[in-house]
Image: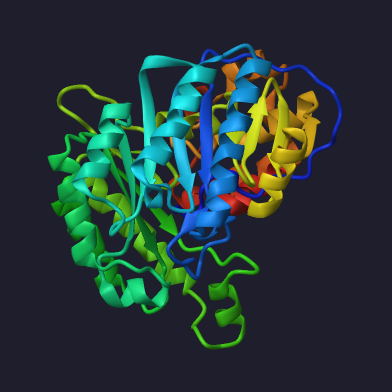
Length: 405
């Protein structure tokens, strides 16, 4: 599971009605599968060990929620489905395929839809991957995190580097031609030399996409508690910054396009676009439907989120057909604020004229108090009518985003 999977921390939003500016980007569907072999020390997402009894309640509830939403919204047209977790590939293949069938029954899924499953090494077999391919899964997001066995053990991963390489081999043998790898920089015990070795090991496997994250300590996680207690050294910010710079330079030299703060897509000679179509919806203020425990949805400017207990989710769906914990509509300024800081995650940045046309807000004027100091400090650039993070701003993006809170 990605350590920085959307949604990130959002600003406090006022709960007023407001316009819902349209986008020509089709909606997507996110499905949360919360089961793992064991929970990683850094993970702040709702997940737990696989339990057959709980899964026997959770999966039918998930099916019911998907079908209810498809009916309520009139079988919307979508072009991406993303199974995240947790470890979706831990499920028996027929169970995941059954959930995907519920999505296809309930939504008008484009013929060329991007269908992603997050997969962990050690959970894959050729038979499982063949079943995925037959069902239309065409993108794999593999949670490698490191190719160093000591680093993997330090964060509670149950696979080793050999398992990771074997997983990529299986995916290629099964016909997957869109494979993304996740790595984390700034892990406990990690040195710049091992980070370089991780990058080299990843590139040797010829991935189509890389998601490279700087480790964040989330309150309540085991890693955060260990750092607070002094059992694990606090990640070195300067070292993490050096690792970030290293990955940008290394991947540029290897022919990857840095299209979002933490994401890199291989520049393909056949013209195929390997950027994550689904994740770009979050950064482009497009609609998406979220299903499962703790899942978030965003449709027509209205946000909703589900309860954060796996058993509680099943209880709620069984009792009422809904597991919504919170729902509200963003007003015009709040929607513009969110669109701004999420849009700035893209290295292309924000087209200022297009932003004003869509939201009716001059971004530089409306948020001048927060943006002017950042422009003066060189964290932002406004050349060519676009607002984007500078190279320095990429490293300090969380500070930049505070301008919109």
